[in-house]
Image 1 (cartoon, one colour):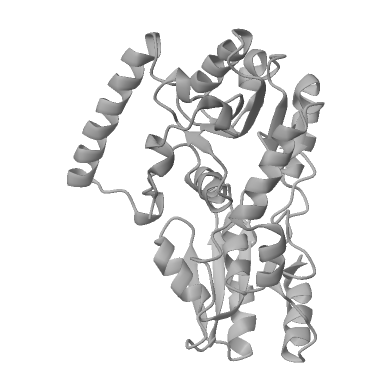
Image 2: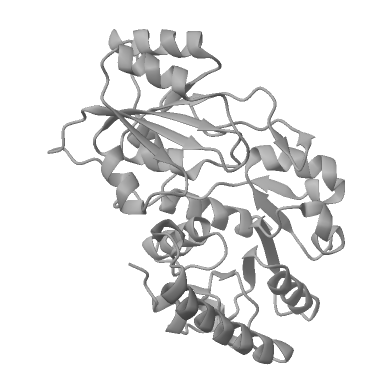
Length: 341
């Protein structure tokens, strides 16, 4: 459940460590536009709920990329760090600011830094799907660091070299209290996770047939067709996950599986592209020997299954997630970047 304490608590400005922003502060011109946007959002949501309700996985109290914003806000809360999230007044703005999304919010924060209200300005990772379309704003000298996932840092270095010099790898975390195994549930199946929204992967059926040949019970989830609870419930019953996606900037769904102590076997795309540009991306950028393995084709997959059946793996996905991708770890990593400036 979303905690609103960061919205209404007002520590003195010198006590605040950082401010998390996805929308402009409603002052000046933005007092009109943000009020209007808020009203329009409410009207849209009422109409949508009546005519065409959003699937559960898209409903969130967080703005921007909900999983990223949630991780930072809750990670800072768990660390007991004084911060504000989308403050409503300039007095509630700290000297260090991270703009997670929204070009309008970024433009406002750049202006505030020019006016001396901000000392440190971090930006990313969800400002724009196409960094090149906002080159002028993203290459502003007021931006101290652009935080995003390691493969995207490489791409930004090619598209916007001046910004690439300020790009720092950073990943969002997962809530280990929510994404956790349940000991009383038997792990009696394999989960096939298919994400085809970025374009088709290899056909999934041959891999399903191999699992059936080995008499595995199978569950299949198509990206966008399930709720968060659906996903967690099936993870808690899964021995391992078999994932198909064109590429991932981070792969939060895989980290959620690792937090549930479910290792992942992920199809490896040899030619991932972003905006039509080939880059050093991956279908699971944070996959390690502790959390799973890649396969390229059916023969690779068959060998992985044979090794699994022989007990040839010593995966420790939840432990890895606890050490590297919890909300607390990722919030601490963000603070370290801000404090280094």
